[in-house]
Image (cartoon, rainbow, N blue to C red; front, side):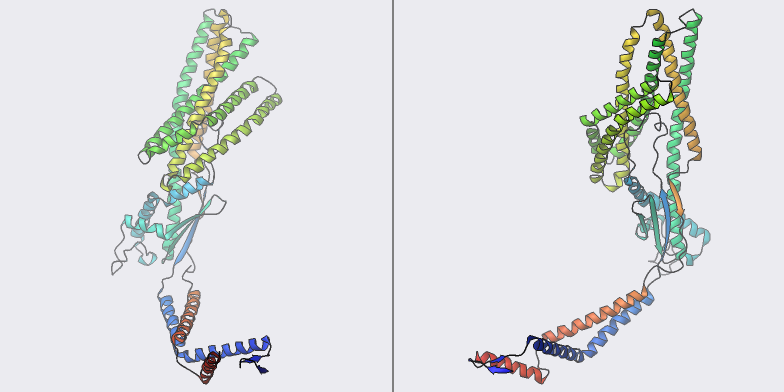
Length: 509
């Protein structure tokens, strides 16, 4: 109930709950009145949006999607270095897959796909199976796009994505023609696979040729060393050496073989580095100097030197015991010392790689990474050669102290053994490279070719109609509320009563 107050206003003793319910009821009535007053515009706007949506839906082209899935294997590195000299680092990370994806997106691959796509159309002449090969700016849609224009278009209709944490890449092609979508996806996979195969075989062919030349040279050197030794013996020279001298000759010959092997790999890495430097120098001359400065850091050199020393000592000491168990124990002890150093070096080089990639444009990253690998390889093998040279000089000093009657024969025997060891290494690597060249399948495997889609992937017509209806309702309600907001006319007796009450309340105050 209401009770008059001292200033003439009434005081309300009703509960908040009753007020709230009455306010909600009044508000609901207000909204209903608002909707009734604007019913025709609301219906008209909603129907208009639905009709426009239906027109779009019925005229929208069906888009078909086809996916070809490939697996990109990580390269295993040089055949020559696989067991000849241990690698100092492991560059094979997920960035390799990212680099290959950039190759897949490159203009070279797109141009080859466009060329094959146009060739396929010219062979089949089935217009209904193709869409993007035609120039849609022409009224009759019978003129074919140029190879360049089609290659430029492919970047927008093909998506290439790596599956998270895997070496698997999806090539997704979309087209209003289901056959064309399938064809584009499979052409991408096939052309990239052939590109990878040709590249890997080219590298192996170059390596095989290089190994053959080196092997033949060392065979000639070995024949000469054996001839010199035989001539010396025939002329009455010393034939037998004591155990200490034999051991010294064996160690020196092994060090010389390792040094020569490291020198061969160093030459290979230097040729690769110079070739890449010339290639990237035309684009970014500062990158080579940047890498050289990073590789030349003293800390990096110290770790490389320590690893090279331990590996050389390991190989020498492991060659002395005849017992295989003792030999393996020696190798394991040295490896326990080498592994932490190699992990430290790997971490440092990975940091360099991250720094390089963050400051290198995407189109240069593939060449930049190869340049980094070659650069580190050059410095690694330089360190190896220098370390072996220092160790060799210590043995040379002992060798020079041999009796005069033994030293001439020891020199000949040492030369023969060192040449023989290196020749056997090169022969093994040459045969391995020849086998790999014949059976090389490339680093790319197509694990799921694209298929012709049974239904369109888009547009989702039901969803579009639903969203169009929601949009129509939203716009019509917005129109109603906006119209009411700017409309100050009196629409009902209740509004007159409310305005009078407000006026009297203000006047009494």
